[in-house]
Amino acid sequence: MITHVCLLSGDLMANVIGALHDQADRVIPVATPAACRLVDFLRDALRAAGSHVTVATPIEVPPFDLDECLAALRRVADDCPEASYNWTGGTKVMSFAARRVAEERRARALFVRTASREIHIEDLASGTSRVDVTDALRLGLNLLAHFRAAGHTVDAAQTPADFAHQYTPSPDLVIAANAILDASPSERGDLFQLAGADRLPITPRRLNSGFLYILKRASLIEPGPEPGSFLLAANTALPKFHLESAYDANARFLRASFLEVFLWAQIRERCGVTDVGWAIRLNPGEQGRMAEIDIAVSGDGRLLIIEAKTNVELSRLSDLIEEQAARCRRLGGPFARWMLYIHKFRAEHAALDANAIIAAQEARAEDYGGRLVWHDDLNDLPRIVGGLLEDREISA
Image (cartoon, rainbow, N blue to C red; front, side):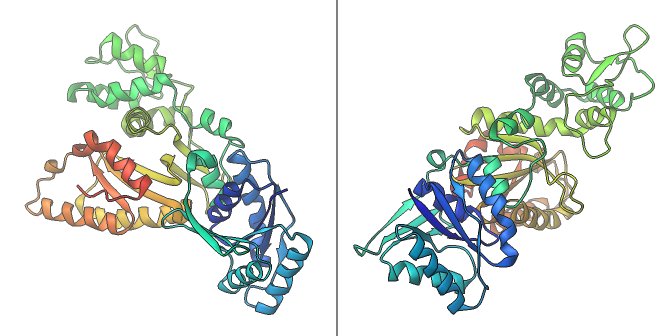
């Protein structure tokens, strides 16, 4: 039996990666009283990654008492002489104690570097060491595992299969999103009128029968009482916000959220990743913690969180970048990166200093661990997404 001792703190992904890398049969968490609540998230994240590991009841230690931490870890070593020690998490005192006990018992010690995804492995019996780079595919890391390891519950998703079913748009919605994105200015006028047709039907003048069929097939609109008239559909194939009606959800899609589905499809079809989620709802029912993510991507051991907007005023870019960076850290932890996609060409901004503002804010986004992406950049999307997931240089 492979036993893995780990130290719990706010960043559970380092614990998850260590246990998965070791293919552990049993994990013994060592935690402060405040961190014991994280055990369920650790267990769920490991299960989401396909592990059948047994997670033991956590061993509580005071966070800053070295003697108590050493005593607790030595008791673990007495009971499990074959155990490996992941000394990445916990407080510095806990980490020092775990590394010291591993050295005393000439055990195997691991340290997971969140910045580089490297695992430093020491065999203290032989005095040898090596560095492995995490293989996300082999480890089974996926979106659900990332969110559970970051301490979040995911609405209607207990397993990766649940997640894929719940957060994958239907093919009909993808077709509708592409049709709306390609609509002419005159067709957009009819689309905005349809977005307001929740009670009174309208008769579109510029949308041809093929376009209307696409919208009906996606359950966005339905025929009205008069020939050629249409209403927003009373039912929807879309995920709904809290207290949002089907009419509201369909109207939101026609006005703006079609862009999220378009971008989801672009990433799924062109970027070489398959673990892509759309309109993901976290922490349902938890006041102050509920959140929705436009698009999320898992690959190469990283989580990428994407916000899509049809337009943004240049004066808002600085605030949005700071908001996205903070939100990314809160939702995904240190293994997460972020992208803000604006479906507008840079040249569409007419201000005299627009180019300078955009260049400065693009640099600011990269300083904050993310990327500001425009319509101009769509052809380069695979390189941009790959760069964020792999943490390689992504500057133009």
